Amino acid sequence: MGAGPGDPNLLTLRGAELLGKADAVVLDEEHFGALLKHCREDVEVVEGDYLQRAQQGRLVVRLCEGDPMLFSSITEEVAACTAAEVDFEIVPGVPPATAVLAYAGIPPADDVPEFRIVDAAQEQDWSVHAACAGTLVIYNGIGDAVAIGKALIAGGKPDTTPVAVSGSGTTTEQFTVATTLGRLQPDLKHAGFTEPALIVVGEAVGLREKLSWFETKPLFGWRVLVPRTKEQSKALSEQLISYGAVPDEVPTISVEPPRTPQQMDRAIKGLVTGRYEWVAFTSANAVKAVREKFEEYGLDARAFAGLKVAAVGEATARALVEFGVKPDLLPSGEQSSEGLVAEWPPYDSMLDPINRVLLPRADISTDTLVAGLTELGWECDDVTAYRTVRAAPPPQPIREAIKGGGFDAVLFTSSSTVRNLVGIAGKPHNVTVIAVIGPQTAKTAEEFGLRVDVMADKPSASALAAALAEYGAKQRQAALAAGDTPRKPSQNRRGARRRK
Image (cartoon, rainbow, N blue to C red; front, side, top):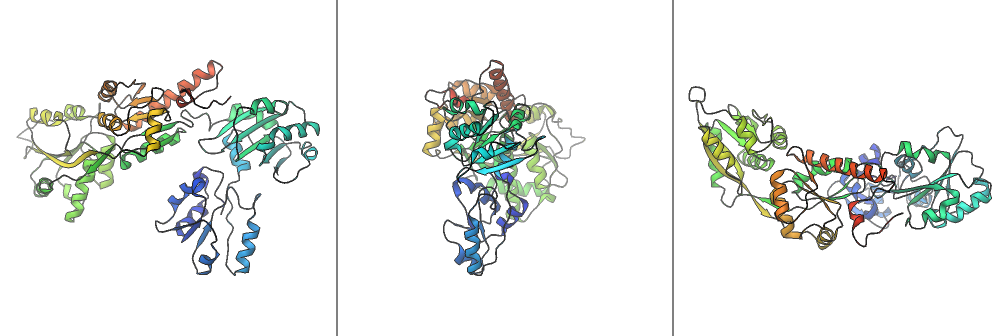
């Protein structure tokens, strides 16, 4: 099966289907480990000989880079399958020859009569390829790129012929140098290319400036620290990836059940027996805690019938909807306890048969909501639904990257993420862009001596990611306007490798 050129999202539907059924997979985890998400949890990862497993009737998927039928040695493996009387299927993959060009903004065949792919690992007559009237794509040639360029010129190609060299194609490490055959040597001198890389020769390279879309993403290649719980960081990480970033999820808090469950047990019983008029949720974790209690008692969302439900913000509302509960009240302005109180109706004994509100919350919640609702005439049962404790320190390489400037940005989604990250890993380096979700988080960051560079225009993780992307786009535009090559923040620290 072809695994594609590097981006795990370029796997074919047939490939994903077979990985989901596989009993064993043969792959290089360093390059294709992300594809294991399509597999069952009990899948066996095999490095060497796999024929014996196939002979036992197990479904084995052998992953190959790119397309298995293009510059590949699978014919030997297919012959071995035939000799062992093992049925096989060959699943095509997206080849680097077209995908990397597309990600570099180079059309493979734009008004040209020929698209030629050659493997420099095999002996080539470059004078023959110099006559290519269209686009020439060269595999496995990065080590001899300068010599190949000279051979093409000697074969009759003008030294002004556009050339692009692209490494780590379709991944967030992709890096492309556009030059000409005559300038290959000076322009590649400091680029630091290694395989896998492609050399593209032809006039189509000249369209890269207009068609480049991947390497021009606002956060392209930025390594962004997301200090949240795993459950909370998924949607945020997916949004960052859409901007070209490489999110690194580092939990700073661990969500645990309350030390004594009796308080929550009484609250759930009161919820079912009609003790409350309202239930107010101030986090997705609170929704999760109540949902787990419901499942423990064999209840479902129908137990909320007759109750009014409030949510502090969009993320909490989404968690409720996934539970099967549509909130009756959401802040129209600031998504916070203050914003919720501003929308909350005062208690009216003529309209409200019950004046009690259930607040299932974290053990460290502030009293803002309770105080506001009490002032409006409501009685609150403030119940500890879950505890937040500081997570264990991240692995040493992560800690070193945080303190040494290895991250381009860090997103702080609450004051507690600031305190806990500094507590378990140390302060981020001063080249790291600090992005915060709101004024209170900004104040906490500044108390720890951090310079706040980005603040969301509204207190949501999605708005925070969008604000960071806008910041990255402005930094890129400023560099281009000054005639400079855009650089990631981590490249500005002392000792960082420079690409020219």
